[in-house]
Image (cartoon, rainbow, N blue to C red; front, side, top):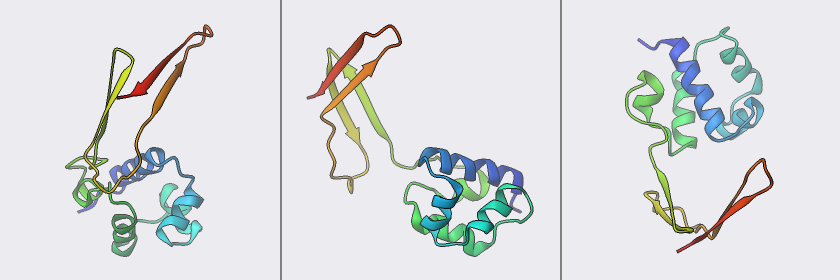
Length: 118
């Protein structure tokens, strides 16, 4: 049986990961915004249709993780290793055609570090 409280925690993890508001998330999975609000406030439980819409809209969401908390989220990993101010990007998502060129880290004391892609 689906534990609604745990499901809501995982749903919030998805919103945080993709940096989406509940309204933007509702639009992304093509449901009414009020349904997200009702779920997040614990008034309603997720339907199978709702869960499947999440699974279809977000490739990185593993269905087993979403339902039961087993498995991983996100399912693809972007690993960045910074060595000698060079960056090696290992992207297990072969659909992603973007490449990383540069990362700049700004510190609170006004200094920064600049890393360029290798």
